[in-house]
Length: 120
Image (cartoon, rainbow, N blue to C red):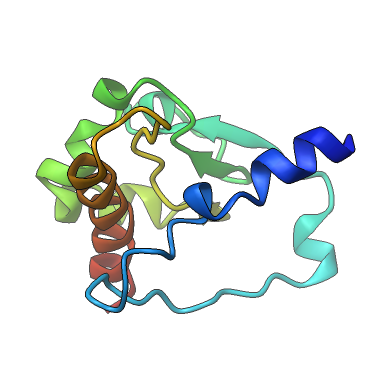
């Protein structure tokens, strides 16, 4: 990672912690080294289908927001399906520098609320 890239990624504006303590708190999950070996990802848009059987993968949402909006609208619907996978990464609703701060709060809340709901 270049120094410029590191500065960009560690900019407080992108760390999503500037919104205070009113956001849901997530439990940290630690993986064992052997669980990280041969790490493979699969998009939520593929994982949610009944045809997918790649359960040894981590489910991600590095997709256009509309492709995983269902997670926000009905998170309970996917618990059984997603529990078959090795892990599910936190949803990643879009955040942009030029986005209104209220929308940034809203998307940060959505990212955390879904996982908080699943962790209970």
